[in-house]
Structure formats: structure tokens, C-alpha cells
Image (cartoon, rainbow, N blue to C red):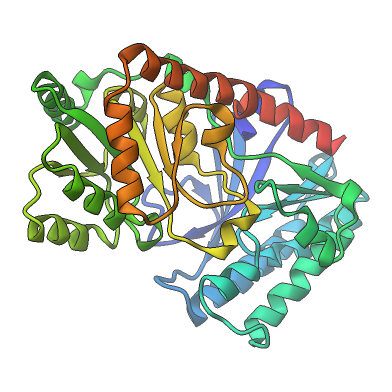
Amino acid sequence: MSREWVRAGHQVTILAASHSHVRANQPQMTNIFSFESIEGVNYIWAKTPSYQQNGVKRFINMLCFIFRVFQFSFSLKSNEIPDTVIASSTYPLDIFPAWFIAKRYKTKLLFEVHDLWPLSPIELGGMKRTHPFIVIMQISENFAYKHSNKVISMLPKTLEYMQAHGLSPEKFVYIPNGIDLDEWKNPVKLEDFPEVKNVEKEIISDQDLGFFTVAYLGTHGLANALDNLICAAELLKDEKVMVYLVGSGPDKKALIKLARTKNLTNVKFFKPIPKETIPLISKLFDCNYIGLQKQSLFRFGISPNKLMDYMAAQKPIINAVEAGNDPVAEAHCGFSIPAENPKALADAIFKLKNLPRDKLDLLGQNGYQFIQKNHDYKILANNFIEAMK
């Protein structure tokens, strides 16, 4: 979205954490901060300790980043004073340095919410509300709602929750995740990606044999409930249906083992593909699948980037997610079914397989028109700028 601000004539600077083991090619840097310009957006990378999993080291990383932001704020020159300060992070601790900068320079403060913290570690991680970490996060979240000029939520059903934690309703703005449709209008050439070209050949070969191809592209993790897709494939093993799982993740080995245990020949696994090739590959499949575990946290809504990619591919979507909103139903671009229900998923695939081609094309077009209207970065960036005004 920040690139759209640049195109609209706004100067954007982003301060983000940088773990030394992650960034291979460091741009211009000091001992603490490194500076980089990417597509007109200025990035300041703050050096912070690395961590592997959730735990004490991650909390230390958070605290270190917050300290670095405070540290950087004192180096701002008179011609670098911001018009607006935006705190945008998974966890709400960054509201404190953001508030300090906004207060010091008498400018506006926006708080952008990606996930509800500390509710996420409470409901997904089983942490108690009395845990010191949760208490600190709750203080941070309440502070953000009280002191921000606007609160931007990527989730549509969060207003009531935020009000319960001190937000005035007139501050609330819903701006979901989005997509750069220009990337889909000017796709790369698969000839430049031999490993992806092989995937394309496999898809076309299966379709020539009469298979209806169903794809999942993305992380193979517990939350994605991909065992549901494999169990649905088992129910469809006597039908002309081929399931593709493209990507990597902590559950991939277990999923491969599950498919082998079931002796499934209609499930195929592929390595991750470069992001720039997703537009071409997604359009090759007959339909795309998205699923999540049953989680109470989803009552506040979802806004997954994967769903935007699927809609941009102009293909029908099967949405196996139970959430406070249902973009697939809103867009009329596929079928929404109960989460973690292989029978319902198999039935949805079978129903799509037997639809006429023009009906499938219409579902795909509906999805594309929906994101054009609601999720194009150009539109969302303008909405964000209006919120800042």
C-alpha cells in the first residue's frame, strides 16, 4: 500500500526491525541502523536480536525494537518531521514510541491493527490474562485505542471489542488487506522460471486427461487445516479430481505422509514458487482452496492475502473458513463450507467439477470484480489517506 502513497505524491518512511541473520545484502548502514530505498519508499532497518520461536527471546526482540525507535526519534532533523505517525505491527508495544514522536512533533497518530493482541496469544496460545506478558500487551492495546487519532483495523468485526477496551467509535476505520492488480496485468514469463514451468506442464497434462484441478498455494501449517483437503481428496479418489498443494511449512512432511498412508494418487505436492509467478500459476487451476482451523478468534473476521490472489486469478474459490465475515459469499465467487469438514469439502469440489464452464468463468469474474472494487491497493491507499486527513 505504501507504494500507492508514493505514486500519490506522499513521502513515506518505514522503520522496521532487522535481524542480522536475515538480511544478506545490507544497504547503507551504521552500527545500529541501515538505510534502504525500495520503489520510492525509504526504509530504516533497526538491528535487533534474532529469535527462532515464541518465548523470552522474542520478547527481548520486541523491547529492543521499541528502544531503537525511541533512539531513532531523537535523530530526526527539522526537514524530516512527519505529518503522520503510523504504528503498524503485530503486537501493540510500538504504540509508545509512536505516541512519543507524534506528541513531540505535534502531529497525528494512527494505530493499524493486523491481529488482536493480547487476545491472539490468549485464545490461540492458551496464555492466561494474568501472565505478565499479557498484562503488558493489554496495557499497550488500551493505550493505543485511547491516544490514537484513528485506529485502522484490517479485520471488519473488531469495533465492539475495541470499544470495550477504550476506543471511541468515531476513531474506527476498517481498511482490509489488498492486492496490487498491476502485477496481475503484467505477469512474468514462465520461461524465466524453469522449475515453475514444470509445474505448469503437470497441470496442463492432468487437465488434458480430464482431471478437475484443485489448488492450495501457501504455507503448510497447522492453522491451514490441509489434512482436511487430503481427506476430501480421499473421498474423491474415484472421481477425475487432482489436488495440488504448492508451498512449504512445518506440516508439509506430515501431510505427505498422510497422503502416502492413504495411498492417494490424486494428491500432488510441489515446492514453493516465486511470488511473481503466482498470477500465472493460479490461473491455470480449475479452482482454488482456502481453509483454516475452527478458531473463536476468527469471529472478528479475516482478510487473508491468499484470498486476494485467488480472486485475482479469476477462478472459483472454495472457502472452508468459519469467520465473522465471508468474502467469498459477498463476492459470489465460489462456495463457502464449514471448516474442517472433509465431506462438505468433497461435495463442494464435486459440485464445482460438474458446473458448466461458463458458470465457472462467471464465478471467477465475480471474484475479480469484487477485489477491483474493494481490495485494489490504489483504492485502499486513498482510503488510508482520507483517514489520515
